[in-house]
Amino acid sequence: MVEWTAEERAAIQDIFNSLDYEDVGPKALQRCLIVYPWCQRYFGGFGNLYNAEAILSNPMVAAHGIVVLHGLDRAMKNMDDIKQTYAELSVLHSEKLHVDPDNFKLLADCLSVVIAGKMGTNFTPEIQAAWQKFLSVVVSALGRQYH
Amino acid sequence: MLSKYEKELLVIIWEKMMPVAEDIGSESLLRMFTTFPKTKTYFAHLDIKPRSKQMLSHGKKIVYALHEGAKNIGTLASTLAPLSRFHAYQLRIDPTNFKLLSHCILVTLACHMKDEFTPVAHAAMDKYLSAFAAVLAEKYR
Image (cartoon, rainbow over the protein chains, first blue to last red):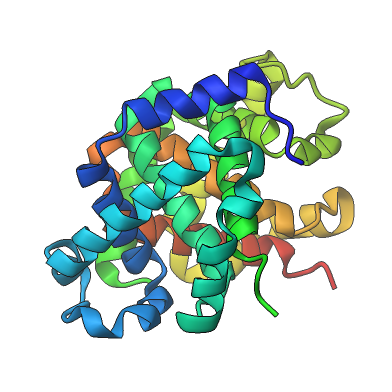
């Protein structure tokens, strides 16, 4: 069981409260596909991902970014059992989508960089640590049902 | 692989960071120590309290080296040879930790540069930091 301090819960909650899903979701996924282009292998049906400009203006990428970010909501609302909350999603990513779990970390890192860019120096080292701890639990839960 | 544009972009970014080298460097280290506590094991000999004299000085050294490398990206291995030897024979930092500091450098740059730290700049910087780390670990074995 993951232990969360009151400060960590507050920090994570605060970030979600101030999150503009329609902005951050797309930005995180776009950044992931630009910085780690091999991730594009999972988005064959998304049309033009040929270069940064194409990715940044691709409506399917933007829409999917929002979906992914809303997916994180469930983890935030069930912080004391993220493993169980994500069991089904994990099976989906493994059996149906066949995503290499290493990629989850890449997207998580890009999300952190986008949030850092928005919050600036308000994204303190302590808040970063709490946020990344949360994301690492999410990433671990998503990778759990791979056999 | 870094394009000509990316190489120029990297020089521009690190030039901008030079006047605030202490801040950027020490903040990156502090973020790393806070998010990845195991990295502190390499700094038992230093005062790593936020913005301590040693943190500022150490942070400055790191940013200066990154700036130097960016100016000479074509000859990274020879530019960094002394640092490479130092990391291999004296410091012997496990190379997985380079990724952790690199990530915290990216976060620090994002916090300070905000929208200017575009996805393209992020990609160039991530590639550069990976290449830099590879050179640092080159002489390990």
